[in-house]
Structures are given as structure tokens and as C-alpha cells.
Length: 64
Image 1 (cartoon, rainbow, N blue to C red):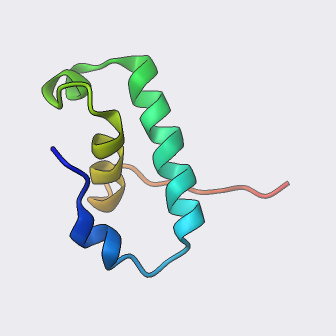
Image 2 (cartoon, rainbow, N blue to C red):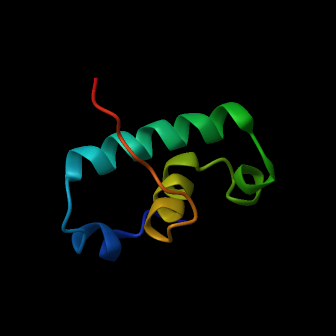
């Protein structure tokens, strides 16, 4: 799986929040090392991006 570039290009919201969410999700996936990661040949960044764009997971930032 590669990073969904078309979805990334068409993303119209806060790019910084997206980058932070993808980074945090990729870290979670790398630590958990679940079957999804193995199916994706260990490519956690592209898997995180796909999950966020497909709304498999949702993210929310809480400001202090």
C-alpha cells in the first residue's frame, strides 16, 4: 500500500493536524505490530494515512 496521494492533495483541512495525527497513529501501529501492519508489510505510515482518510479511525486534538 502506498500513501493515498490523491486524497492527500484533495485534503482541505488543517494539514498540520493531519500530519500530527498520521505520525501518532503510525507510532501506535509500529508499537502494536498487529496483523494489519503485517498485511501491509510493516508500512505503518501509509496504513495510518489510509485509516485516517477512510475514517477507520478518527482523531481529535485537545488543547491545554
